Length: 242
Image (cartoon, rainbow, N blue to C red):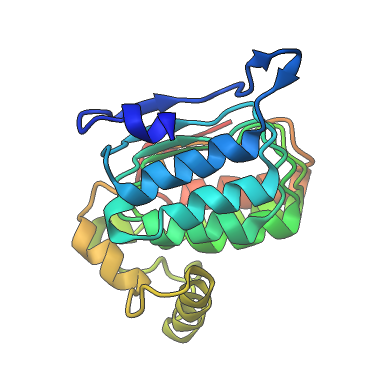
């Protein structure tokens, strides 16, 4: 209640990293803080553009509360989100985040979580519906070649989309598979029907797509590294990866 009460109409940046202050030898339960944050996002009393929840171990259940709270139309103003060091594993929650906030979110920090190959494959599907996403930090997770190949495919699919909203030949999904992915993400997000990948990229113009990607300290071997190199080689942008 205090968090919602102090949030004024001008609050655009909120840092809640390392939550849980000592209170008589006990830590404040993080779920209570997350519920207050969810109330703040839903109420849209503050047009938050930046939110830092780093190093809280909120796990997937806590992340789901945040993402669900962002679902209403008035709560999708977030441009930068830091959820590093939170023991996240569920790619579905993150794909939902990208799908419903994809027209605004520019930076997503997932450094130091527990995302495996399957989670990254799902996340990569969401990237296709997040044309404004410029920076993605996936360092120190747990994915390997399969996840890296999915990311490379998503990156490769952005190369010509930046210029004319056309998918890269031989890389991006076909129209039918695009529709299938769109329907799946719509079901995952519980709404937002009618959003298509091509429409998002067309409406956004040329200045779209990832520019910075950090995948260091994962389990990526030659196959994944080659896939990333080929995807970046086919891109006309100045994207950097580490």
